[in-house]
Length: 500
Image 1 (cartoon, rainbow, N blue to C red):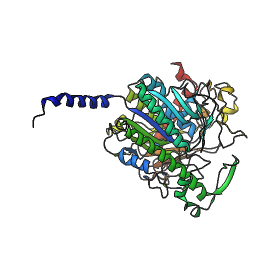
Image 2: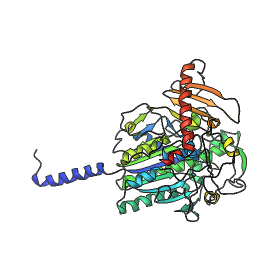
Image 3: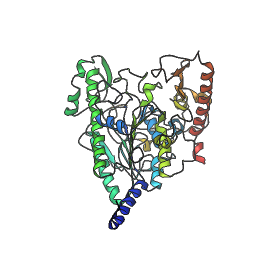
Image 4: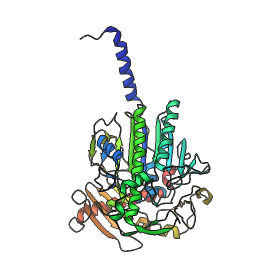
């Protein structure tokens, strides 16, 4: 049948609008949970957790079976997330160690492409107060509603560096409501959206709403052993039955899941879902008091899989129209190269440890082209040598309160130290490298004799069988590659990358 002549302009107009929408830069929203390990989702067959929204994202988008936090602890992983670089390159060695002001973040790059950039929630790579050279505004974001560290119900948050204010309610929902308001403002301004939403959940100490706690009322009877964590009443360590702890932790995860659902529904309602890249991951493995021991070895703080494997999901219907699962090994360091490729921005002229995931998103790449390395820096020699602080102490003093006390204080301060020259004794500390399916580990702690291990993750994802004696040639090869990478990291640590 011939199309009536009068409808042709309408058809052309619709096709033009569709083509424009597809050519328009995608909105980008990157979300991360706090201490949310790989196994703690329904779609990864957790025996108790209810995460219907994350399950749906995994069923409709691109699910990463092997997504890694770049470090088994939070501040370092967050530094990698923002910069595409291993955190040791910038002296972010452990929780409470800050980034450096010279680092280039995703927000720096995307702001060049016209994005309105906002940070929401946990920051933990420096102070969020006004005047800090490391607050989100100084690191490329136009706006922020953030906390120096983690938070529970009724969080205290700083808006754009102002003194912190209490926001009443469930913290994940508060962040999402603020995200939605920011999207509305950006739409009115004609700007594409870039948001980093770092939830305070499910980091201990735990608390939850009655409706979410009720979903897990059966757990206290199932897990009776005593575990150590922070008390919500005193801010100091206490011991409680694990079942009670899990009930509260899982309530937090479910509340976070529900908040993500609010955001997805909103994007769908205003017709932004199709061309929005929505990402979720965790910042390290499950914390020790809550880990059930399966299916991976280790917990938060360990360089075994249980310390670094986290949930990883991307939804982007315009680019990922059909659900897929990938076994490509990827990490938080890959986010900056990926978004730089999307925005058409060059990578910073310095060592980048991540790779662009665009070929993975497009289904054209199944294996990582280069090894992936992990390293918990041993700070003992550096700290005892009394190096100069990288920033004045007053700039590293936190302002946002939290329940957990540190040295009797209900806030967190940060530090970063000058590293004047490469010292080869600083190659110590637990470290590993994954090349293909094999993972080489050097386990080293507190000056103890190093222990080398080699695992075939394809057949032994629980890292039970050490193949170091069966595959000595492969072990030596991986060890040599790990050493060369470490040397590169130490060179970056001196500040050499900032001299380009």
